[in-house]
Length: 262
Length: 263
Image (cartoon, rainbow over all chains, first blue to last red):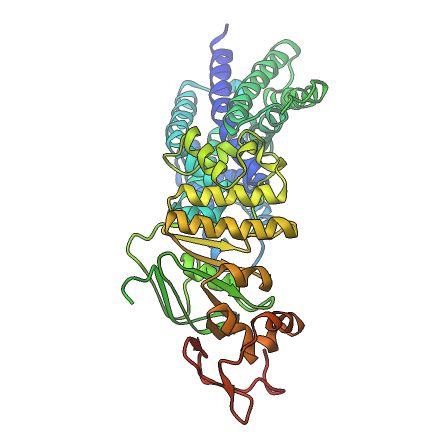
């Protein structure tokens, strides 16, 4: 197997592994739009990275984290509904990113790569970022799992039972922000949320516990990565979109299987 | 009172400048069942949220016993249908609860049969019992129940109130609950607090049911209660205001409930 394909496969599998449990929370807590907004902000992170001469991965991670904090703060401070707020922030950050990039004449970047991912160009340092980021998210997520589940079921009940709900909610958003920053190289700004949501939605039909759904989503996501990369390798299709199409095919196939008896 | 589980003093809450609660006094002691009643919009849930610490009052003080363990039963539980969660798993979200403890708590509230059912599939009455079991698993000193019989049929309601009384007897905890149903509450509660933005009157159920402020709020319902409970233990002055009698407390400046009155 050529090096670039090996890197791509490893990066994709690592991302799918952490996207499973986090994507499940995105589905349970109806945060799909939140994920979209963060991913649009990633492009602004790229632009600022060039402007400040930082590594793009670092800049995107910092940008996503900042936006997550900004969102939580805005949600608490003003009366607009969350989806309105997200609807303002998502296109604004994306457009701002494009405008900033246009000012930098000397920078020629492959915009398509950022919008739709450039998985086959994952280098060794990219791979290190992706593996490190995924491992970090997983290491933080596991000890928080039960508490995150508790605030997802009923926030006020969790608060009365002594859980720091606001802190946990922020932690979840930051974890999602890291995953999105990591995922940008793999499927691109416009397709990131699909990797969080589609495998989780596919696993949901056949899961009987939250953990089954999370692990099932990881598994189906990894399957989609493997299938998408194969498609890309043999048919010369773009890698990111091929993964998303594979995930969607797995989701549809789930309807053909009988729902598990409860 | 130092033995109180929770004591509210002159609590006021306003939303967007509109007062929702004013000058509320409330005390719950161990082993005591206190019921909040009042019409829609009277601020019952707001008061419960202040007791739970979910909301910080704009004025007044809320004193809790140090390290007070509260078992809270929320009015509604909406779990997203995509979250596969069994009743057992829901109960085990309380730290340190194993299957045996969850089963014991469910059986205590008479819902042992739903242990392994998906949470979203249990009926309204069963869900209330599951929520009660979760509150009990905290080994509470104070049970706070926000409309515990909501969505339960009439026979089930009486049974649930009996169950709450039994739980109080068995666990010795204080109970603060919100209710709409005057008849059922009267027989199971130690103290009734009649709320309409402020505490209209409070005291033992029989005394409260004779209070003109109470009759004003609940109209015909209150009269049918009065048939059972009416024996004059207080008198009215010339303006119709109640002259205080032992055991019955009229809070705030006594006032006549008349046309100028907004509640």
